[in-house]
Image (tube, rainbow, N blue to C red; front, side, top):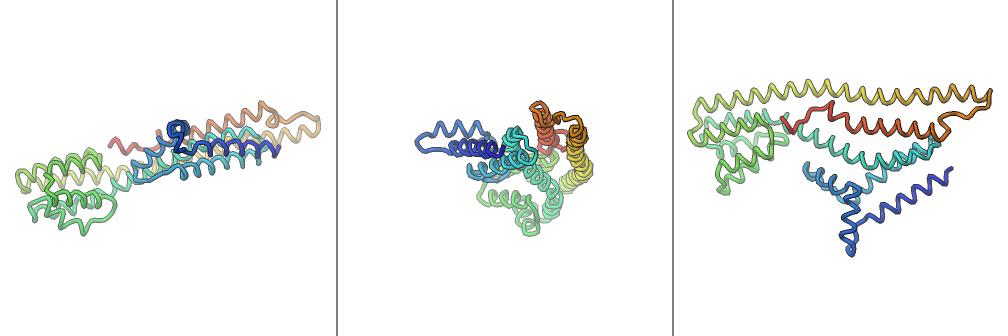
Amino acid sequence: MIWLYLLSGFVVAIALVSCLPQVTHHNRGRRLRLAFGFEQTQAAAEDIGIHLNWKHYLGLITFAFSIGVGIAILTKNVLFIILGIGISFVAPKIMISQVKYQRRKEMLLNLPGNLRLLTSKLRDCKSLQKALEMSIPLMQGITAETFERAHKSLQLGVDVSTVVMRMKKEIRFKQFDDYCEKLLMGSRDGFHSRVIDGTRETIDDIYDDMQLLQKMDIKNKRKRLEAYLIFGLCFTFPYLFRYMESEMAKEIGQVITLDTLIGQLLIVSMAFVSLLGIWKRDTYLRLNLDDL
């Protein structure tokens, strides 16, 4: 049986290497990269600032595929190699989705503190550019870069409305959009007490939303961990029954069900459904931070 594992691994390795883009076959290489989901995954990675090249993606696919081969060797079920191919496509998407979520969450949680710093300078400085200049050295976290880019744009003579619009597109948060509208009002009419109080109310609303986000995330995290437990327990039963059946098989000489082709198909199908469940669980057990 071992030669089947080695042969299948060799065939898949040859197929992956053949997908490397060739200078003389650019269109063919692009079609193959599309078929393997590379360009879609690369675009998703670039959205969060990660440069994913073909070699990195090939390494992830090879590592994930090797997991399937390892399971196939341990279970003596060559069909698990098919599951390894499925893992090789799903694993990069799961990893990128997790990184994207964590960075988005970090940005939103970091936002209220830096907005408070900016608002505290608006009353004294009376202009957005000066307030940014005074508050940026005190800012921390991922959103500090956003405000620093806004300040540089204002220094270059870009009008306030354009700078604010760029910040809105970068943050993509409805409560922050409301804050930006009040910044525009203050830049146009002056940062008087009513505008300052309005911005502080918006910051308080953002802070309350982030507190609620953290509570819901903790609750959903427990549910996501429970999914691993459920899938793990589901796999204990077939092999528990296999052990019981093997004891009976010694006495009556019958073939163990999991060792038959139908049994191997059933267990691989169960593993494939579990893989899909893990892939899609975050759709239902994690907040969509892009729609806030």
